[in-house]
Figure 1: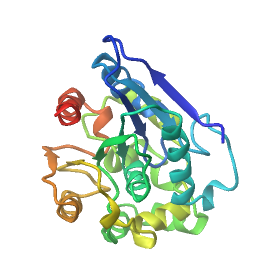
Figure 2 (figure 1 turned 135 degrees about the vertical axis):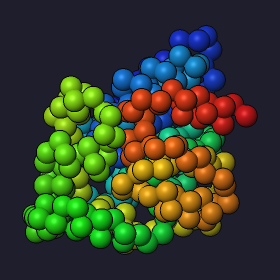
Figure 3 (figure 1 turned 90 degrees about the vertical axis):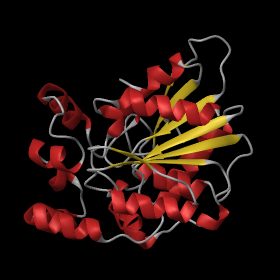
Figure 4 (figure 1 turned 180 degrees about the vertical axis):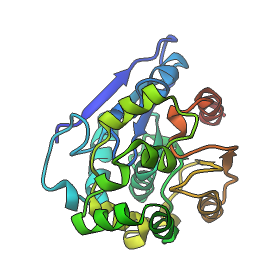
Length: 261
């Protein structure tokens, strides 16, 4: 599988290890390129942002609509397998769920793991009710077409679901121009159709959530943290795409402290 991997090498002498960044739904490796990718390289890590199959500039294989989380796990396994350890993982949203599935049988060089506004390992149907309440026609159209595009078709929707009200207008247009459709099957799996085996997760975890995350609520994040036996970091007023918002440096700094502890 030919996968797009954006790599920034350590700019601080000998690398401390690798960080693999895994994007969420409707995104690609590009979502890390402005902030996390160069910043972690500056902290001494070889940093790699991956576009999963059928995303970004990665190979198109099969129907995106029916691509499964298992396929995304295979992509992650391929990337990690090509790196010498230690390899730390940061998974955002859908990427976080991919990481949780992967951790049932990780490569030995995998070290610590950060779940950032991650989809949860338990069934959570609350997102359906929020979408029906706030975007009833768009949500029904999305289900009829088996396509996520209607939910993110305009700036109002995208800002409410993924970003903050303070997200700059100019940057919002640029982000929306690069967003794409997502697997409808994975959407069902995120809701609970495919749950990771949490008992097999043995790597040290850091769980970060946003207080005002529309997609993965604070309540859902806290429940996930309880499942894994860790204390979550909840970012005050934080939306879903924390790595793209003002204040991302503070979050990145806490992640480095966790990785280096």
